[in-house]
Image 1 (cartoon, helix red, strand yellow):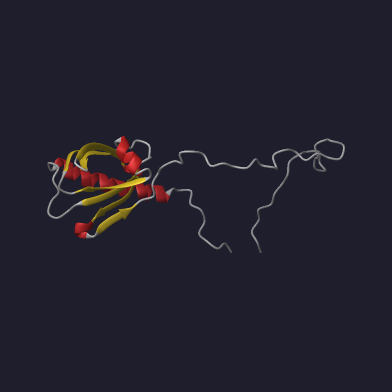
Image 2 (image 1 turned 180 degrees about the vertical axis):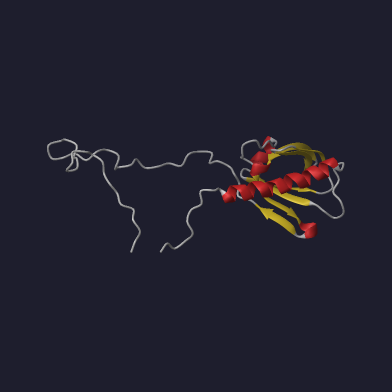
Length: 167
């Protein structure tokens, strides 16, 4: 008997992540359509991967936050703009204004501490560099003593592997 559930052919994790990111988009869109001010005591902490595709932040912020950055949308932000892929917003960092562009796919956390609400995401950021790998040693055909490719008894060079269940 297998020890865990079978692998799904339906990408449920991706579908759920996409739906939860849509929550962030809807919340930010409602703030945008309401004139850009947050109702009541609401405020947002949004953490995102700074190296994700589509992220645009000033170079000095990228140097300061080479991997991940958390912004706060509370009192002093401007020009909030939301579309289907992400948002842009103006914020001040050490009294220096900056425009940030953040795709929803780069967000790793969204928190509204005023109502104890939070979402955690798996960042959908491809690796910037491919991981190194070792050359496979089983790619070349096996040579017989006479230097010829070894074949099975029927003359083919196909190897059969049985992945049957353990009993």
